[in-house]
Length: 288
Ligand code: C5P
Image 1: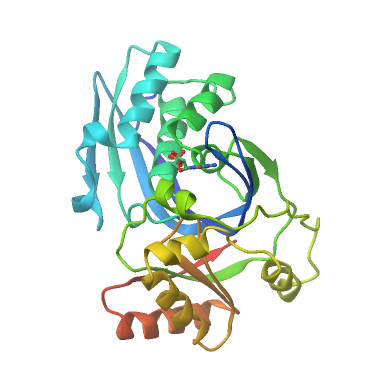
Image 2: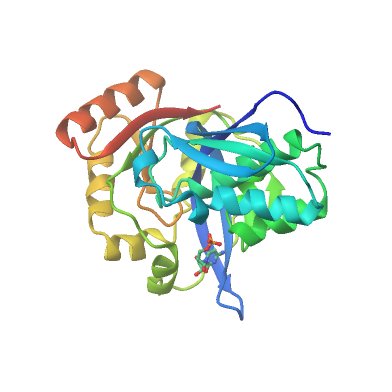
């Protein structure tokens, strides 16, 4: 039995507030410790009942996407269908709002939203271990995106831990329109491995949260700047704005975020940077 009505699932941008590389496995994958939060901006997946599987694109970044056959969304759908022996199909639409290969989830969030939408459409148990295995095999960021809420990500991405209440954040997100290769960034990383982070169970206020974040880092930021120096320019531009508590790169880049004190400051800062850098993708957003 399949659901009759379209299922719509959000694929929010994920922001790595910190990302420590704590080791490397024998197979070359890196061990991570990252605080991942979900912003209120993102792509969207719609799954409509159909006899076959198909994918089409809408949205501002639709034209840069690869052919549907090479998109992680369709891979996720095909692999879920095979894993559970589903005979039904689905007509999928990806509304692409986030820039590609940008360190804020993009493809991983889309794949996770596809798994959620199709589990609903096809009446599958999303908590089945086969779904978790499938998520990790699609990409190291897919499990945290599948969880759909802020979390600590460890291991190579499969070890997802709940995080206590975090003060809300107002952010400016900036992507310069250059794609950064995740394997290349990991390969270029030469610093010593970092420690695991001990995150407090609670923060007295936003300033305490920001102060905590300041003693963490993104270990992939220096190698990514080495490959794409424009990331350094973005961080400099964010730090020059009034009221920016912290500016950092997310994931393996190139998207950077600035934490600002309130929504008005985020909108004003985003407007100023859009005007001074018209080729950059600049968005004011928040994490609730
Ligand atoms: O799994 P995902 O597609 O995100 O990973 C892309 C590449 O990034 C991997 O092939 C690997 O080179 C690198 N990576 C890593 N350690 C991780 C995640 C990714 O070395 N935890």
